[in-house]
Image (cartoon, rainbow, N blue to C red; front, side):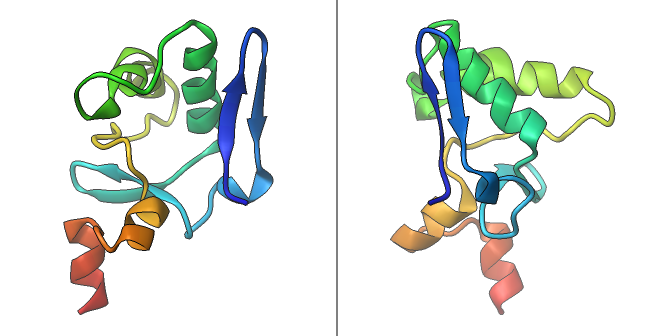
Length: 104
């Protein structure tokens, strides 16, 4: 299954199918981008610091760790603006505007 998660205090799990996949993309302010190994690793390492996917929009870990670090890497990756990913949204039928436009 497409999955990644932290196993505190010192381990993370990332399924290989999750990385650079057209199936699961994160939402940016301008559309979608595939999850990279860097982004997923940074996100899960953020959990090992004790920061969770909570707060407004479940964005605490993304705002505190993921986006901040991904801006510093080269090439920089666009900020993630929603916790939910396209694959998760599609299952619920709550697809982002960029994906809806592509379907028409």
